[in-house]
Length: 387
Image (cartoon, rainbow, N blue to C red; front, side, top):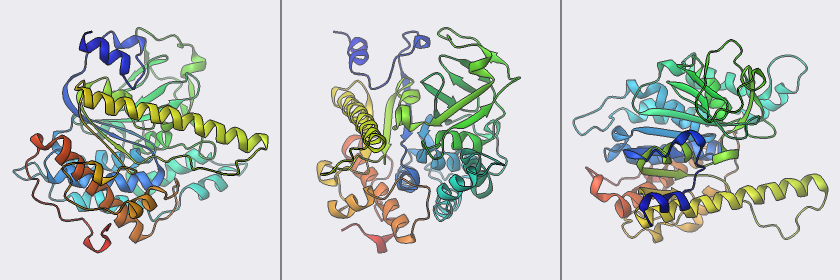
């Protein structure tokens, strides 16, 4: 069996009609999962360690969903402001990336947006979220102001077509609907669409009437009903790892997963509404678990290079790990609620430390040959050690 055929059989992503049998090219992509502010802050720790070892500057693509898109949005907006030293390490990473994200994590968004979105006038909840992102993080930054490299892709789920709608500088695209070239869309809107958590922050409505759409092979939903006004929801509904647009493109992938997990319940609800909600959560959880297994299987088989690191990972399972982390402490961090709600300084610093530690463990175990400086291993916040 050829490697291409094996890849097709165990791939964790859907093969679309417009893929045309294209094989992934050499390059490095980073996938940032959803998970509310918990994910947003955890991913900062991952980026922190990637920067220290010189990999941040080598990224070709950053694909994100939901809470991961907030972090990716800050990185995208401030990328050109990063100051790179001779080792290609950003010396002002803290100022340009860490501080804005930490400030955002102190800001209440979800409850305020929901309550104001219920008013009979004004914006929807998703519109209020976009306004909060605009106010606190992105201002009037447009997708057209983002860097060409790395390519930033913010993923949302198109409720109408049932697949991903992707926001990036060169295009807005859905493989069933079509493509808009060089979309002049606010970064705040793209991130809000990616993080429109259902049902309270969803849907996010995109008003695209008058835009020029490009028809491509596989576009089967090209009528005005699918193009003029599009309702989208959280990208994590379709792909909570942000895998699809990275996996199909590059041979080396780093997956940072800070997603939630369905808790055990010895007395599950039996009323129709809450029972249906739990069943849907279980279905989504099982699909995500299968996708994770396929990702890790592809790394083990050699079909892809890279690593999977998760907020529920255990340092003890990474043979190259040197920084300790008590699994009881890290489990508590993994259970931080999936919210866009204020987070304490202590939780912020522990989550950043945990992202840093597990990223370091993964790099030493699976990608040590690509690194420039593995000796530096001081926690970002030593006072919040995970032991």
